Image (cartoon, rainbow, N blue to C red; front, side, top):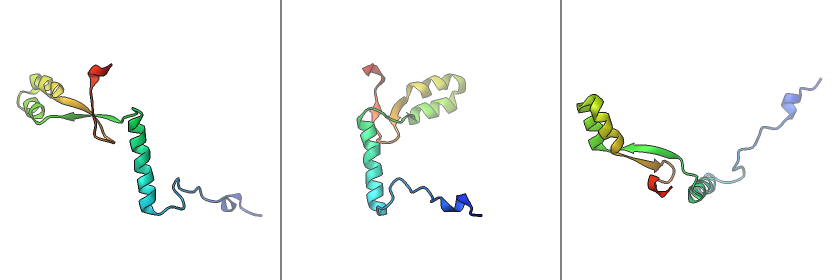
Length: 85
C-alpha cells in the first residue's frame, strides 16, 4: 500500500527559484504598486500632545487625542487626507 500523502509534493513558496534579495525586491515592488493604485493599509498615528492630554485630563483629554491624529498608510508611510472624498 502506498501512502498518497507522501507522494504529493510540498507547495512551493511564492518566490521559489529566486535568491532572497530578488524575492524581497519583488515583494516590496508589489506592496508599493498596491499603494500606487490607492489600496493603502490605513492606520492611525497619534500626536504627542494628544497622548499627554489624554493621560493628564482623562475623559476630556480623549477629545485632544482624537483631534491630534492622522491617518497613515502603514506600508508606504503616506498621510491620507479625509477631505478628498
